[in-house]
Amino acid sequence: MSSKVQAVPYLRTLDLQTTPSYKRTSGYCGIGLALCERLLSQNDQIRLCLACRNMQRAVSARSALLSSHPSADISIVQIDVGSIKSVLQGTKILKERYKQIDYLYLNAGVMPNPQISIKAFVKGLFSRKVLSMFATGEGLLTQKDSVTKDGLQKVFVTNVFGHFILIKELEPLLCNLDNPSQVIWTSSSNARRSAFSLSDYQHKEGQESYSSSKYATDLLSVALNRHYNTKGLFSSVVCPGLVMTNLTYGILPSFFWTLIMPVMWLLWLYSQNPESLDPLAKYHSCTSGFGNSYVKPLKMDLDDSISLSFYEKILNLEKQVRKRFVPEK
Image (cartoon, rainbow, N blue to C red; front, side):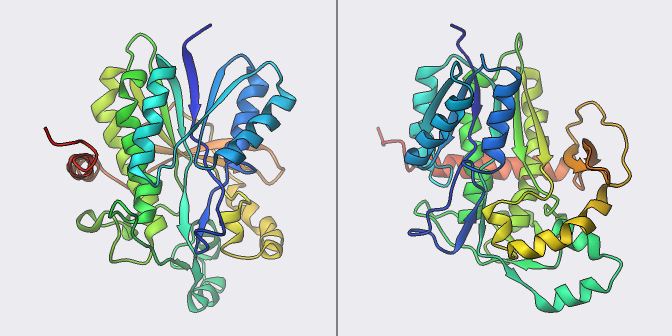
């Protein structure tokens, strides 16, 4: 049996009893589960690994996938990217279990209980930026973040840094010049340069931690390509578009999205043919006015100098954090 694996950390569902102020993207009924179904429908002979925070629900998700693809090779491993200890423990298991990873899909995401700015909402409704406001949440959403046991901002470590440690730990399995691997990040149209500050990359001082973290993933993807393409690792970012998950419903109720959906379709009436993968482009999942799906690559609002500077800061943070988990000699 092949030792290659399609590793998909498609986490996770929100535990309302322990973190009531946070909305998470759900792997068990959202983008992650849909991705797994799509992969298996195209090739149910791949080795698929689900990296999840909640193992009980991971088992249920695995069972659901096997019910429609009984011959599939699906395994699970517990990884909570919001905890550095969990990432280190989970990647140790992966390195013992596999020799190579072909695709690593990074879909974990958390947004502190979002607050709508009523003033910005009303103003935006009667402006030329109304479609952009609903598509990106620019000027519309604010959040209040918290600090984890590792002393890191929760949104930053869950959406960005935990994934980075995951990649670094799995580097031996991902880097292969004879068979290049691909790392794919779930970014967002909400990723905006104005929300990110290199001097406050964890977004301790601001109120748009989600937007800042998604812009940080864009920067990190560009920097990873600069450092790892020659080793056989390639990184891309995608935007899934407006997807109805518990994170979306945490912003506005379901009936509102049902009413606004026809308006949202107008955003994608005009398109261009997809280009070949570009490390400076974000690949948006779109739908035409006739309901046809397509991918639209858009250049990201960033440059190499900022991405490389951010990468150096992330490396320094990595060194500081790792010291807490390595016993002194």
